[in-house]
Image (cartoon, rainbow, N blue to C red; front, top):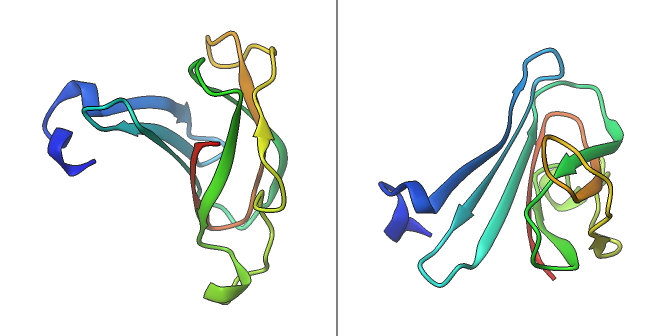
Length: 113
């Protein structure tokens, strides 16, 4: 993903206007179109059922990194138990979305399944 660090094609904000929730989300892309979705919850409040609009393409996403995982001394809350199916529910101006569990004070990395 580093090759497109300075290019607009390598980065896309998905959620940057939720100051009251302290949640940010963005996509990183490489030259081949591979994507990593990053979602950060900067509060001590877990967010169950958080809906995030994502681009079409993959029918499902899977969690590959969760900073709240038990292995890092966290609570173990997250989305690693199953793939997250893309849902035809609009959110943040997109026609489809994911419904996520956002652990407290955490960052999640997800990739197309």
